[in-house]
Amino acid sequence: MFHKIFEESRFEIYESQESFIEYVQIEQQKSTKNQKLTVAELIKRMCNRYWCVEEMGDIKRIQSFISTLESFMNVILLQFYK
Image 1 (spheres, helix red, strand yellow):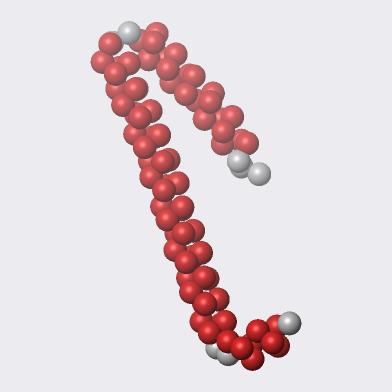
Image 2 (cartoon, helix red, strand yellow):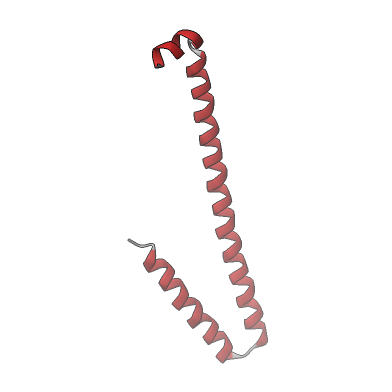
């Protein structure tokens, strides 16, 4: 079957395969960039929320925020450390 396809289309099959591979690589790069932007946005939101809590001046709330953040971060980091 491959032999028949090659006889009919010659190098066009290789050219189309190369185009497909380039397309997949570009899509993977876009996906990676979007993921990095998502992580950066999440970190920015967390920092902004911390600054809001800090502006309130309530030491107990600040400590609670940091403690809660640390707990959640430890769970996430340990889950993906392996």
